[in-house]
Image (tube, rainbow, N blue to C red):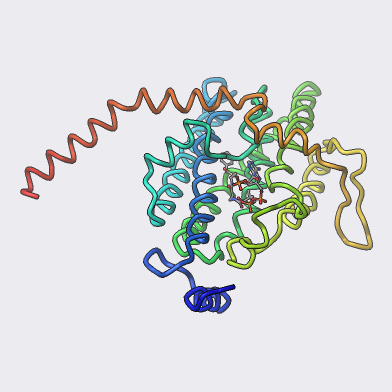
Length: 311
Ligand code: FAQ
């Protein structure tokens, strides 16, 4: 049963009014947003690691500069998103300690290793590609600070996806060995990229409520289908084979039918047992500890400025 406050809140949402930090909101709405926005922020930050692995081994100076710019954008997205979460009354320290203790989730995709340079192509093309499909609707979600943050993030993700596809194109137009590297990267990243959209609709525990609150405008499976439909022709253009024997254009539905996702692999990662879960967390925790002196210095400098200006 909805209380009077909650009814007014729901009506505002249905009229398309954005909810702002100081507006009344149900506690569960606030909690859901803190959960999703902080997971999203953590994903951006942990998501720097698979690509960071290749910065020193990029094949040209230009590729290195582009990759560095992309990784730097991801750090920016993380900070942007932590700020959006802070508008809901949680502190950044609290969110970070939940990440470092292993309590908070971040996207499953960042628990896979980046084994070759071609992975930089596949990540940009497929991981940023999926991120865009998921995030474009979030630009219209009901919570103002999150929706506004997504606008710039999506523009930058679009650059990321293009740089990834450009790496794939270069490899596919290269030697047979380079094309094979690209195929191998597609084989390894295809299914994990489809898992980014979350469990199937029937098992998505948060979907119904998030849809009612207009945090989610499309379901996990709808967005996943969009990703498949968009990516298959792009793979064909590259001359690569999508690693799914059941993939087939369906003229009736005007969509691609595709094979079963291995949800046991996904659940295993969510439980912390993917190929890189432990390594990712320990690298983040170590970086945080080693950055303590820098945070202290910033705080000391800010205090000194305040004292100098008599505040
Ligand atoms: N990984 O009931 P649902 C990027 C969890 S893009 C891990 O369907 P919901 C850019 C879910 O949290 C990646 N956990 O959940 C980049 C829930 O558990 P909880 C980040 C997952 O929230 C590119 C449980 O399963 N993007 O970083 C995953 O309604 C390249 C049940 O699921 C976002 O976070 C998963 N894949 O829908 C950076 C976008 N899927 O919390 C660097 C915003 C589900 O109840 C390099 N987030 N779970 O304990 C969303 O749109 C939603 O949160 C979904 C999940 C769609 C991810």
